[in-house]
Image 1 (cartoon, helix red, strand yellow):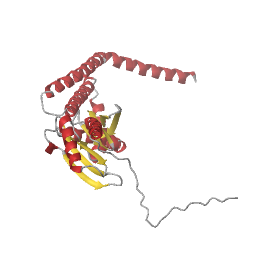
Image 2 (spheres, helix red, strand yellow; image 1 turned 120 degrees about the horizontal axis):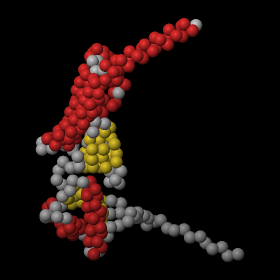
Image 3 (cartoon, helix red, strand yellow; image 1 turned 180 degrees about the horizontal axis):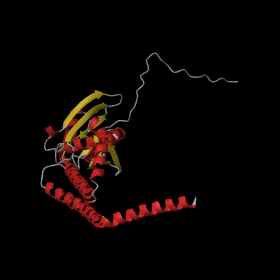
Image 4 (tube, one colour; image 1 turned 180 degrees about the vertical axis):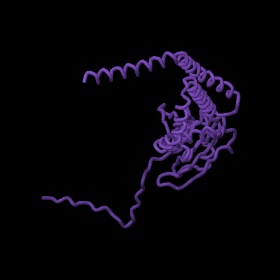
Length: 296
């Protein structure tokens, strides 16, 4: 029994001794590999910054510039890893890794279908010229300013300053309403006035109020005023005009300002904006039945 333990200890000692010898023999290569690894990491960061600086003068979108910089940085790191394996004389291990990469890649691809779909969609979004940083968009029932587009999601900042992260695949697969594609946005307001109002005067007053208070509106013809219907309690109209803004928030502010201006103008000219009311018309033959007072 003791002989077996001694033999096992000797074999383990010999194995450890061979490992130590291998480490000592390959110590210069290990130090060189560590140095190369540090240099590669630093170089990847500087090359990424250099690519961003070079592409900064191009007409590419910022999201596309970031994508190219990240891909370049990753390629530098991968090249460094291959170089390190060569320094450590691990060429055979490299061949084994490459041989198994196909099978591993297939397994990873099946497991990460959603993530890969978002990555591919992020690349597509980086090429779309009508979607860029700073645009005010509406998609997937969310509305806000685009502040980031990466390989995973599109980040938008809503009116309440909250951030929404929408997966790239959903943005690609669903409609996008971009308020920033034109230099102007349209304000649409619906209102109504009483049946006793002079409709032509109401139209004239409304247009004059808009022309006076909004710089983008140069003349009355720039204001679209349409009478829509005879409502239950008012004659309803629709008002449309353009403002110099591409933000949905500015459109909301302009609409709010218009409501206040119209209320002030109508009050000064005794134009009534009626409450919802209902008129009851009793036939002439219908009388009111009074209860007779019974005298005891």
